[in-house]
Length: 599
Image (cartoon, rainbow, N blue to C red; front, top):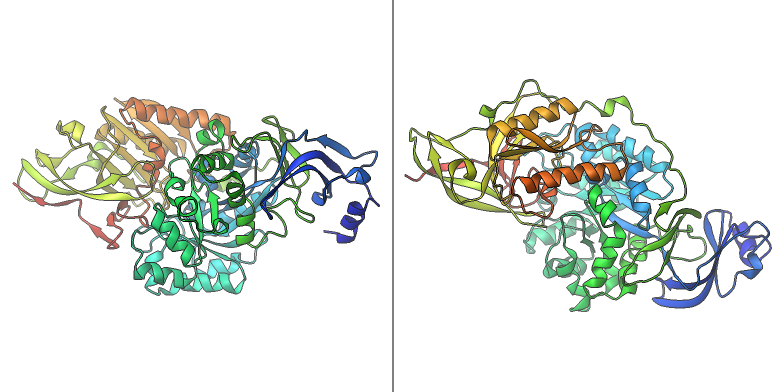
């Protein structure tokens, strides 16, 4: 930035490129609403903001009359995964720009689990060409839990050190190996030391309800923020330990309402709270919004609009050390500006980023750069043989052909990432444990399996899950399976499950629903088996067919495809499944699906 030039613009010695007149300035740095404000932009940055910019208007200056609308800093998403939208980065940006998002802090650990550091570099390069700000965190845990899963690639301290100095890298992605931190494991501490030495931010992920010594040990390790809290006490504990509390409101994870009570009821300083989405699928982006949706939700939970906007702008910028660049409307900052009619029902009427008008009245005003994907990112589903119904059979232990078996079952918690570890008694028929539907049993238990898609081992691990409430013969398969991203399938009928898996082997990845032997919902995701290069509207329609397929199978969960995708995430308690077996996350060990026969 040429500061002498900016001074000349502010003083009126040079004309501005853009002037916005008569706005109501949402001054997040002072918590003021300042009427009758003019703002002048030059070379993509704010040169002047104050009572009148008449002295800066030249013959070629573009002038916009805000007509009393609010002037709001562009919204910043403090933590998110682009891949969860099932869109390439460019298509994700195309979708969120309309909703006032002008900056994102992304952790591409999904593609990293498929392709390693080259996958991360692919995202970094694409981020550099976007019309909004996209900062990248180098993934810290690939695999997310060493020894409990097999990823497609690995990232360790050497790779972190290499990537930490790439342009566009803002810090270390969420440190999911929280036991490795509080048990003083070498790898997580080396990665955090590398980040700290580079002067960058260490992202946190403490997915445990235990706020005792393990939590204190994790905080002592150095993570500077956390988005995994779900309770009021989680928010308070993190803030007291010096962490920034990231309040998450994505497609399926609704963790703002309880935690924000730390501000609204307990009076904690709101400067230490940030807003993020974490995971938003395409349908949410198209139909409901992105960070604007999160802002509206937080306001509805009783947080004053000014504090909410600070959580979505300046607080995030300060935390990541970029408040000289973004996060407020002030001289020298990028001209990331939203024109908004109503702060309560927050919707961006006009979106400006880096001084360019990106959207107006819900329509894009510029064409985003085309970013073709290299050929190597497709064809990531490697199955050495055809998967059959027999692969999903669960045999009861011992010679008994009939009776009851005591089993470990993954219990879904709707709209939350954690699961419950259920211990149930299920009937054994002809030596097998079947789904509730197949066994005509009221327990709401389906089968779930993880199939290695990275290394062509043919390995299939089968378990049991409760919470989908299926009422039809079905199988739902997905190559989106955080964070290992093997092929994950759930269902009540082994043949339908096999058909769904076979379909993904044909298409190169995605999500597919099979009911009674017929495909009733599908989205194809050829890029790493995680993303489509089609526009968000098209992907949203296809993901809607998957959600409709779930409903057609009797599932009543709000976001079942998101809940499905986390069944293999072996760092969030209590029970998960990986390609190595059923995982007790609390004990960090494999346990049997069937413990014993009970008669």
